Length: 263
Image (cartoon, rainbow, N blue to C red; front, side, top):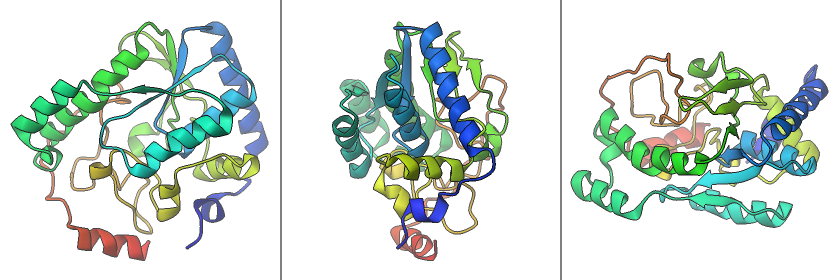
């Protein structure tokens, strides 16, 4: 099987300029929010590019991630590999154990498959509340959002204000998937091996699958749901509509294996 680098890396027109522009945006963000800025990394390919740019420029931007308790083993292993590769520490923000215990006792360990409301409630416990602690006392944060990722993100700006008034920087907003992997190839950036297995977008293990040829970038996230806006709430903008459709039953492992085999 070919690697994600082999499949996707390609130097397209303007690539060098986009790299320089992203690096400049990070430098400016670090200067204007010195001591109060953090990269909230999901450890996906885009976020690994940002981490490399931050470390390469020795920028005073903290590095933090959400350990939801449901991450893939490969994602957890990447945290340690990242720390060793760059010589930096990654903050890990976990959900409150009692909140998780109570949610599972009330709704079960597979509540996310039963309704969109329960899936979002699970995200709230495991991701949204820990994110608030990650961002506490900070005036700005950096993400790997790109316009190409989905229709819901098609107008992602380079910087914006979140609901709490913090500045949210998206330095790779105009990058393509080919750009991301060309940078990874050029700089030997460590990445999650799940990307080699056709996982372009990686979240919690129960809520992420590989995608098949021709499927949208985020088709592997909450794939049993019918709603168009497949987000956990971390990056939903205030003017985006909230869908209330009921999800499909999740496909079984045989169907998922078939899709992975055809990818």
